[in-house]
Amino acid sequence: MLRARLAELAAAFGLLTRLPTGFLPQPAEPAGYARAAWAWPLAGAAVGAIGGGVQALLTAAGLPPTLAAPWTLAALLLASGALHEDGLADTADGFGGGRDRARKLEIMRDSRIGSFGAMALILALALRGGALAQLAAPLPALAVAGALSRAAMLLPLMILPPARTDGLSAGLGRPSIGAALAGLAVTLALAAWLLPGTAMLPALLAMVFAAAGIAVLARAQIGGQTGDVLGACAVVAECAVLSALVAAG
Image: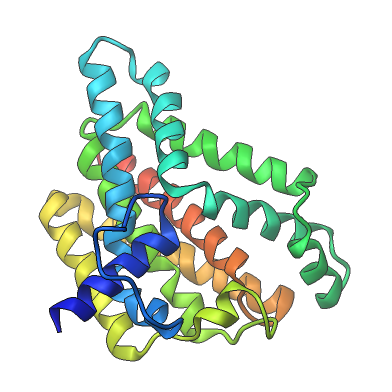
């Protein structure tokens, strides 16, 4: 039982981060990545904690938060491999540039970044950088934002069918209800542990509205979800959660 949970933890970190997992048992089958959905928030929290630690250390060393923020963003992108940002750019290009479902999916598969994707990336980085400059406690805030943003991916994944028969999302499969609920429980536990009570509800609501918005948009645009849509959901949810935490003080 413990070995299976550790393998799922390795699957979550291997899927969503560039952090080393070789010391953990590895998943024996592709289905292990869907069963690992409970650990997605832990992977996000680890990436966020790395970024928050960088921000806290740099500001403690004397850098102003506005100058420390780009270095923090660089650490976040390195730790995650910019996987979700790639999905955001592809989704923005496809949804913004395609005339019909088939063309949108074709654009999303193209590795080149167009104007919509570039604008989406600039806005996402600016929003997170601006939030970092305002956060009084960046380490717990970024850890929670990382956990909530990865949990947000479960909503479109659970309620929408795959928009194509191949690709990352179709290959992963749909997590079980139990795995999804366990992921939600892990997320709530992390939020309750790391956030003050006045900030927890705004952060959760921001995550839910961001995930629901992406799900509705994806349904209207391509009739389902893809790996790119899930990545876009994570980035949008993280921006929303950080904005809510700044507003909550």
